[in-house]
Image 1: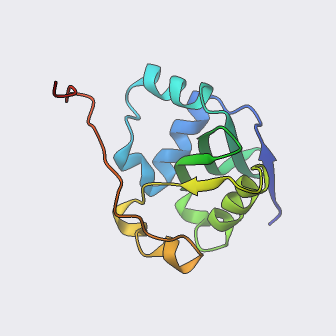
Image 2: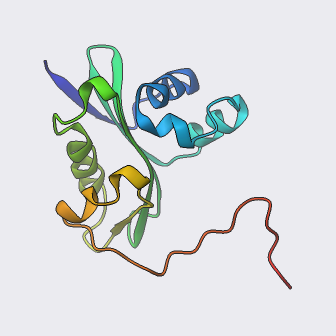
Length: 138
């Protein structure tokens, strides 16, 4: 099996949703909201993908300034392709696109929380999340 990694290869919203369904990430993304999914993929400015021939088997979707920080908002690998190093390689390819001082940031899925420390990430207890239904308190 030859997995090919691509930088910013166009991915349709349908391909993106299909991959999320084939990974565990589909459980935590609004895959039934076509407009949201389309916006997520079209407004990302760094997308690294893994392909087995023409089949999308992995994605690292990020929003970044390339110099200071890169928010890796989705890291998904088809369950049939997991534990082959694809997720790690997606992150390596993502990091190679960034300038030397740019840090990777992410929010780990509950099941993957321990994984990131094993590959070099440090845990940060200062992350805060404002849900969309919550307005800023004035």
